[in-house]
Length: 228
Figure (cartoon, rainbow, N blue to C red):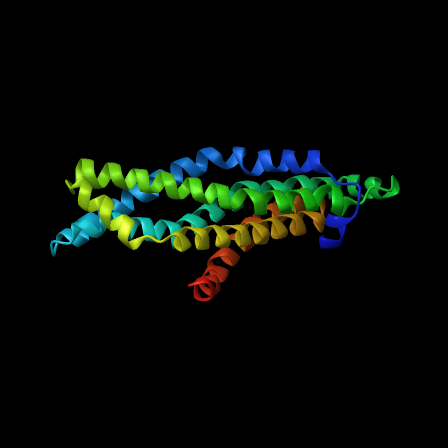
C-alpha cells in the first residue's frame, strides 16, 4: 500500500470521493453519538461529584474523558460500523464478481485504485471527526451541567480551562488517526480477500466491523500509555 501511494498515477479524485464517504457520510452518527455521550457523561458526573460538593469538576472531567478517550474510541467504532464495513462490502463484491481480476488485465493496480485512497482518506478524516465528536460532546455537557444540574457557568468553564491542556486534544486526534489507519486496513483487507460469493462478502463485512472495533479498544490501551 505504501509503495502504491508514491507510484503514479495519483488518484486524487478517488481520494476525495473516499473522504466524502468516510467524513461527510459519517457526520450524522458522529454528531448524535457525540452529543448524547457528552450529555449522559455530564449527567452522571454531576450526580457523583454533587455527593461531596465537587460538581464544578463535571466540565473538566467530561472534557478530559472525551478528548483523551471517548472521542477517538467511540468515533472510531462508529466509523468502523459504517465505513469499514462499507469498504469490505464494496471491495468484496468486486472480488467475487471478478472485477478486481478485470482491473489487473487492464493494467490497473487494484491496490492503488481501491485501497490507497480509502486508507489515506480515513486517516485524514478520523481526526476531524474526532474533533467534531469532542466539540459536540462538550457542548452537550454545557447544556446538561448548566441547564439541568444547576452548575455555575463560571466554575464549569474555569475548570475546563485549568485542567484541559492542548496536548490532551492533539493526543486524542493522533489516536484517531491511528484508529483510522487500522480500521481502513482491516476493512480493505477483508474485502480484498473475500471469497465464496454473497455469503463470503457478508462474512467479510461482519468480520471487518468486529475486528476493527476490538482492535481499536486493544490498541487504545497501548496508545494511551505511549502518548501520556
